[in-house]
Length: 427
Image (tube, rainbow, N blue to C red; front, side, top):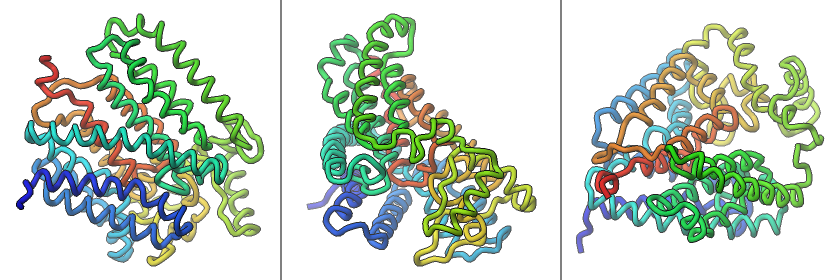
């Protein structure tokens, strides 16, 4: 029996999706945390999406974006910094989700029947995904308590990623189900989607409080009746925010950090000299690296390029956030190990690796995300795209999750689904 090409690609993509989302939890709970096994699974994710992209890519802009990235990253890594080819290949994997996921997703929008079949399947998958996260997070919370180990189906260390993905999936499904219906009635009918947000408060991801606020504020249509609907939305958002806060405070041992510091110190830290000294002292006295606060890492950009002015334009090459297991670390990673360790803002992820040239390319890439519409669509769901923009903005200083294939796939799938097909527009 011969399977239609588009259906075969859809089934492969959905199987890849579930493997990508669930191997972490299965590995941690059944076999214990094994870095090598995770590395193999991450390699599997990258290889499959690369092959699917090569199979489905159709638009010339995708060729331009992918080709320009390969040229810039190769020049930065192998020419400007004289690093081995293997480091360029391995380091480039941190950008695979950003450049290869979208062509695969867009493939299903090139045909109406293909798109409708894919959207129906992905809607079911995302609903099942929310239930899977509720189970996995509850399991981890009971077993380990609140913390980084509460990463849902992604497993240990992915608490932030799972929180972002929960809000993306729930927001999309809720927008779709209340669109064209009475707002309050739609919320009541789909209360499960709101209830499935609660697990995001069972770990230490403080960002969930920002996400839940924007979730409710942007859930309604951004039009002339937006302020009227706020009469209902604001009390609901406040109620859910307070409820989540109580759950968080009751279950997180150190809600503001290990030292009980305030949120500004948690994000910003002290001045550059203090943070550098603390990192060097920590390195000399402890086996684990010092986690420099996020915004403090951004402030180090000027300092690093002042010490290395020749790297301002090309950066230090891709791969500085990888290596150390089967592939050697780069000279930058060896010298500034305290800077690449821990959570890294997306700004640092781009600027340190690809410099000014790569930063310009990244801005261009994200502009194309917003202006390139899928086939047979011409109306935006403004609320969804504002929610996407909010996520992009937060990630600039919060994390380099764009290097995670799962985060990139969720974000770009969400963005593609934010374009309304013409027949829905006319309905």
